[in-house]
Amino acid sequence: MARPKIALIGAGQIGGTLAHLAAIKELGDVVLFDIAEGTPQGKALDIAQSGPSAGFDATMKGANDYADIAGADVCIVTAGVPRKPGMSRDDLLGINLKVMKSVGAGIAAHAPNAFVICITNPLDAMVWALREFSGLPHEKVVGMAGVLDSARFRHFLSVEFNVSMRDVTAFVLGGHGDTMVPLSRYSTVAGVPLPDLVAMGWTTQDKLDAIIQRTRDGGAEIVGLLKTGSAFYAPATSAIEMAEAYLKDQKRVLPCAAWVNGPLGLDGLYVGVPTVIGAAGIERILDIKMNQAEQAMFDKSVDAVKGLVEACKAIDPTLA
Ligand code: APR
Image (spheres, rainbow, N blue to C red):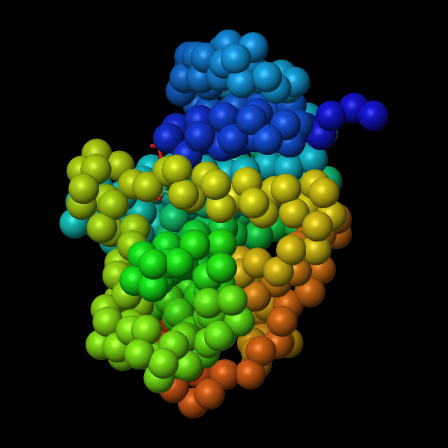
């Protein structure tokens, strides 16, 4: 059977890392696409030349023409600009919206059957715009945010508890921004919820609150340290986890920015929710019950996302 084809739209920091991970995990043959000439070709060649030592079978191709993504099974979109220190994700809206328009047209023309994972920020608005511009089915277009935000939360918790990250599960919902909603009640160490761990004396509520705030600021902390760009190793790894769930029909339960029309009281919005990813794309959305405080945080996050969608419509009237 032919290997799956993975198209990476954007061959920058995240795009290059995605290609490397896809190769090492042998998820399929990779096409790196970018408007910058030479960058995707150079990265493709460099990664291909790591193959003999890493021991993978996958081809790597760099491209500046959308025709090269033809028939892709998965497209992962990082095209656009990242944050610089002092910028919020929302500051990227105007520039990256234009980028989504050209990417959406390219995918619609050459890879209309792909499962599309958007990483470009501000995430919830960009995945919505990309879906609108591409016209692909909602269940095949999804945003990567919750897996990354949850991974950050899990990492910080594992350090606090001095336990393996593998035994820490965490749920982070809502928009990928300052209003994201880490759900302590649904976050556990081997099934023991965080509030119980506070009661057991493993940590204090103050320390937990600080970890939650650090999770919310997780992206900004890295932007502040790097100074010239934003995080790329963890974002790429998170998107690869989602792509693998689709390609291998794993039915993974992963928080993603998915189209929600019905569950959680929403009537048509891209926002971070728990989903099941399998061969059909987003196969299910978990209609979890939130308590009053959680619901209030989620509502605030939903409002922030709606505001960004309205801002997109004001910039590009074809979206209205
Ligand atoms: N079409 C294709 N590629 C584009 C386009 C376009 N219209 N516009 C820009 N690019 C390319 C750039 O040439 C660059 O190689 O997108 C790439 C972006 O790479 P980086 O600047 O290294 O950014 P990266 O760190 O990979 O982040 C990409 O993901 O997490 C988000 O906020 C982040 O929006 C940013 C995106």
